Image 1 (cartoon, rainbow, N blue to C red):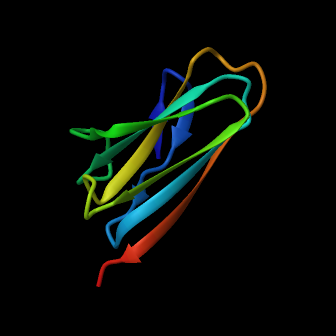
Image 2: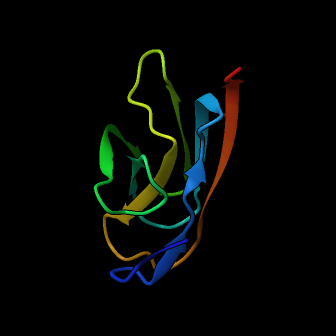
Length: 105
């Protein structure tokens, strides 16, 4: 689990080492636009982690989906997401689901 002191939020690293692809759905039920950035690392920590070039902007009260696959995108065995709001939300919540696919053999 990683703690972000700027937002006082916690999030988990996701071990995707056995998978070549994943899709993330972000549900933004807040009253502000958010931007999700994915980070990857070869270790389960933030030291030397790198952001993937793609970000996902999700309008207030909307849903966003982003997919990655090792055949066309950068791949690391551990990923985590960072979410920033355009302004501090005064209502609502943000949640996410992840589907892993194309298991390595």
